[in-house]
Image (cartoon, rainbow, N blue to C red; front, side, top):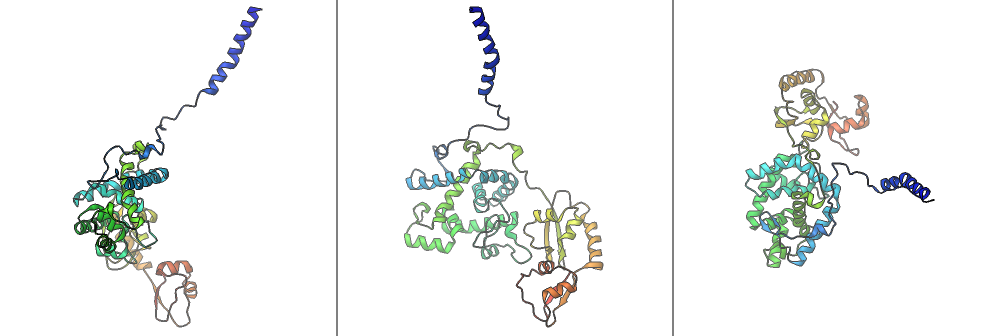
Length: 367
């Protein structure tokens, strides 16, 4: 009987225990997946001194700490957005850092376009601010950016960063502090001067300012904290995850007439979309008259000039732009039908809206 029980126990162990052990064993974690995502409470344990633009953030003051904690929690919680910040930084930070160094400005200013636009050229605010650094039209033009129906240099990484440097230098000279300078960048010089005069204070952290401006500086501080030490906040990206730096070649133009961008794309052996992606500052479908520089993928400038000359000559001889002078009683729909083009194409070529009113004598492009 004893031998029988021993044999039965051995059989049970052989049949069932390995299965139980296998069920308890956790699946292997893929090599590229790392542990260490901190709790939200851990993300707001500020043990070291925090600086921005070379100045300390007084997080020992309870009210300042509360505001900083809020921005940190909101940023870390929005994990997809932070991942995109980190990935895009690899593409654009090298260029921004280079310009900031040339302009003798703090490298920490590179976090401003992160907060302003998430490093997106096409970003637009409800107030009409556009581009990486979110310039309003008036401010952009004041600091040398071209903004018209053909070109919007607020979307040009290099030119908008240069303009931002000029603007920030002027603000820092006026207010004597990067904290105040960047508050003015957010709310405007006039508004900040009025608050300083009314409240008799020159300290950003002592001023009662619009809530958006109060948050603005600490949003930038949160972006810096996370992006300088992403692993500490649970963002484990490898070098393969980061977008490669933006590389390009330049082609310089001096045109006496508008030229289709599609013609330039063909001469560079790239798609129209690629040309637009490399030049988000070029609006519409035509290159403006005058001197202008176009960016293309590295190496695509080779052989461009003879190809473009040939294509441009053929285009002028066979295609070119054609115009129609509006007569009394004509409509846009009728003009589109006459030239066998869609109404949508006619509106796009002329940058018209669907409710555009035309008058006799108007000159309308039809090709």
